[in-house]
Amino acid sequence: MLNRRDFLKGASLLAVGTMVPQFIANTARAAESGKDTVLVVIEMTGGNDGLNTVIPYADDLYHKARPTLRFTREQVVKVDDEIGLHPALRPLDQLLQNKQLAIVQGVGYPNPDRSHFESMDVWQSADPLRKKKNGWLATTATELQGQKGGVPAMQVGPEKLPLALRGAPTGVASINNASQFKIKLASGDADEQKARKKLLADLAKSAGKPPDGSMLQFVQRRQLQTYATVAKLEEVLKNYAPDGRFPGTKLGQKLDLISKLIDKGFGTRLFYVAIDGFDTHSNQAPEHQRLFDELSQAIAILFNNLKQSGQDKRVLVMTYSEFGRRVQENGSKGTDHGAGSCLFVAGPGVEGGPVGKHPSLSDLDQGDLKYHTDFRRVYATLLDGWLGCDSKAVLGEKFEHVKLLKKV
Image 1 (spheres, rainbow, N blue to C red):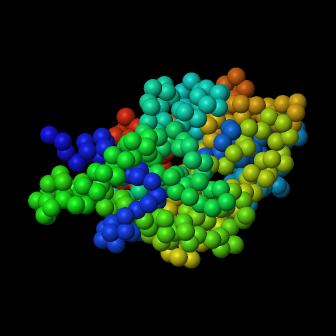
Image 2 (tube, helix red, strand yellow; image 1 turned 90 degrees about the horizontal axis):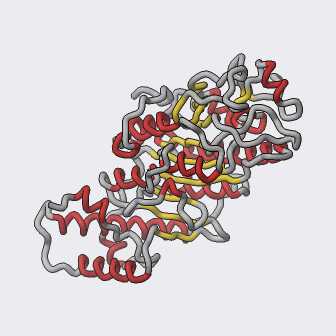
Image 3 (cartoon, rainbow, N blue to C red; image 1 turned 135 degrees about the horizontal axis):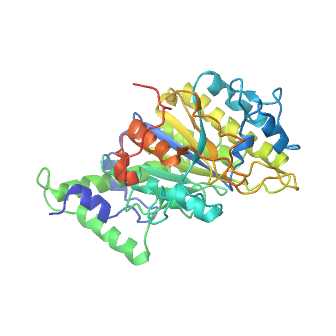
């Protein structure tokens, strides 16, 4: 017998274009407003140099390996007596001092791949064997969709969904950030959309009230929730205008919109954005400075805005990159593809500070930092402890949690 969980995994009525019937917008309730926890994922595309992100400034081996790219004790944003952050990450210092920035060190996965595409697939599918076709956030969105209606996951960026969000039968939206934000829902071809429109109309015209607890009642309620949510999103986008608090960068614009959606209690619990340019094979210093300026300012302002509206306590931001860089800088004042790296989890819900030890610079893996924390442990921690999902259902197996969330 078809149950509600099976229906959610096998059917999708989400994409019927951007025209939402007015009777739905007027009569249906959108997703439950603004009390649930939210996760914002920031992809640092290109393979961020973790060694110049979380810097072992007290280690002589670091200074020997980075004769032109190194940072001194006086330059870093000091974390403790051994490590500091890149100077351009100084806007994150307030989060750091308030113990709202967790620095997860030595992150990676078994048998690392130094190909951008292969390694990004690993992180986005949460599968080092690259056998899974669905993204980990797409699977999470399905789990969240099973709890409530609406659009649980949203990408703000290019129209093409990243693998992390692909494979969800419903509940995923993509908003591009061209001259004006526009919504595009995860969808099939024109015939499929036409069939979905007809099915929606048939549901709306159903004679009489379906029996309480029936599949028809569930389908009607879920689809009305979804379309009301889309109508609400379109209204936000139509009235969107930057308020000037965020920097005029691409990432700043994206987080500005996300901030507004969270403030309005829109109901989306997963947001995904990307910042490109971390493939720094040459002249890394100025590019890293620019990228970290953009990243740190946008994150800091996001939490400042959310704090003013009282929404900050239910939001976490996680950064990640597909791999780190080699320990030794190259002859072009840059760094080449490596393996183990670091990531940040920021927000009032974290137990801030370093998580794990910085990888040793005297015990390398073919010139790379070794990893000691499987990235799926971070995912499992956030799924179970923050989003309230079953991490095993998403990741396929249980992983030990990382100690980065505050106890509640």
